[in-house]
Length: 546
Image (tube, rainbow, N blue to C red):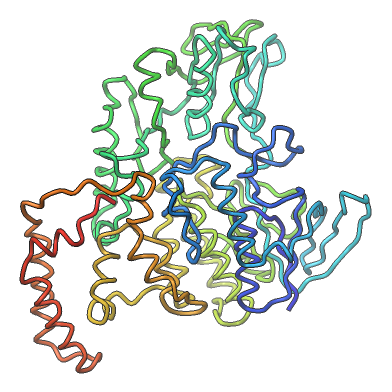
């Protein structure tokens, strides 16, 4: 089977690797001269090519933003900058021999429904067609900027940019004023960066957004929030439980009401901002929040009925969710893509779109699981429902999305990342059997329960499992602690009796039940009894700030 992968960013690379795992004949077409996609910073990127900004740092921690069988370097910082992230992505590709399958400087001009690609060799200018049995489109949706039409823009004498073009705050803005339109991650990042030279920055938005800190009491926010045990509760309790937890984390860092940030929507209904510095900029007045731009004048922008004279306006207003070369292959329904599992056209499952989702954070985990799922479908190891059943599922998902999320183009791509990844993992048979693990590998079980949802768990069993997955999980906190040296030792004065009492109750129940796992269960019950005989010591053994 011949498979084409379009794009060699962090999504395309893992798609190639998933194909290689099944020994498929895979070819990857990449327009740029090297891999990395968005994470490869270039000041002079070609039109239609997105890159990070010069100052970009990942807003999710390294252990939550890694591939499932390739842990990040122990010495890497908790939050890696774009250079470190790019180095990690390319190291992963080299480790699994992905570059040997990439044709660099090859641009796909057209993708037909039958899998025929029209390609241009950018070095020679030669154009050719090539046919494939299956196609994985991994170009993402951050290429074509979305620019709103504000009255008077043509009269404005200052500079207008899209965040797509913004790379860093240049000295020409020193002592001047700027407006940043939008209030998602890029908008706030640009506003904070501009304060390094600008006298005043206005953050102009029609909808105030929640702003979350990068950490909670020193623990990366994603590690704290996405704890496995907490997420089990989340799956049973109303979503308002998790929303309140996120709001508490945010307001304990800085209370939005003090800053008069009147937020009208649920924290889960719009992708929240993650930023470690904007609170200080609001406090020192270098960033001020205003309403949306009403109109431009020759010298500035009118917001909240008043004109502000400014020298620069940056629109951080997102991107058009389109892929020009797939006009016939990619179905559309307004802002929504009618794709099964957010990736498969029901009437043409031979062409799959990976990475056309948004989850707010930790997207790499979702991209990898999408690739694994798609390749299992290609190989006939996962059977798709009927076309009608897939269409019904798409309709139900889109109806739920419209009811829950704020109505914007970005949220037409939004998924609940943890639930989405678990759903795909279950379908391909790589979701861990926690019940079995509880008895046969209690050390691993408790490590997983007391840790965030680590990607390595999806390599413990099932297709293409990895022998190093267990060790990667058990040593997760070592890699998190490593950048800071050995941890300061603490004396444990107690334990969370409620948690351990619950665990003991489960054990007592298990001891009274004859299970399918056989006589080895009794040895493990004895092992649990030994471990729980000293609750304080057991708690200390698993106590970790991570």
